[in-house]
Amino acid sequence: MIKITSLILISLLLMGCEYGRMYDQPNPRPTKIVQQTVPKNIVQSTKEHTEREMKVNPYQLTEENIKFGQKTYRAFCHHCHGADWKGHTHVGDGFPVPPTNLNLQQIQTKPDSDFYSHIYFGGKYSPALGTNMSDEEIWKVIMYIKTGKTKTIDSL
Image 1 (cartoon, helix red, strand yellow):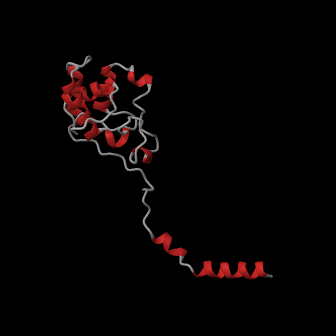
Image 2 (cartoon, rainbow, N blue to C red):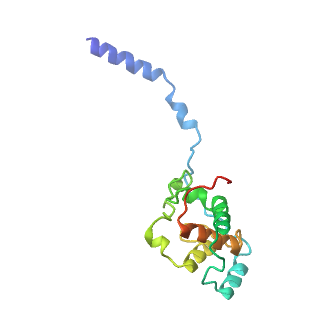
Image 3 (cartoon, rainbow, N blue to C red):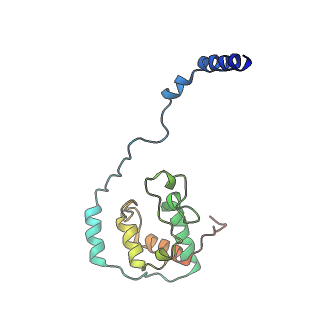
């Protein structure tokens, strides 16, 4: 009898709570994934890029260039790929397909020209950054990723 009475009291208590208000709250995740808009000058920049055909990183491997690449990485790539390059970030975890883990051996052994094309033109799920980044920034980000130095620099 005590169990039945306590069960009735709990159910009456729960019915008095306003759980219906939770449905009025906005959903923090969008129900539809919005595609990025294509920059207006992408056709012209693509034409210019294919005419140049960059195959090898033209910049010397120096500590200064690596630091520059790290700063650029933090501005353009960090929010998706993360500080440890594994792609587990607040932004990256919200995508239907997680960002590429840049620490993987198959990624680290890719030629620089593949990295350049992927950053410039974008991938299946990653944005094309060729109109937002200079060639110098792209090459130095590649240099930073290829060195494998994921530790942060204190001056940043």
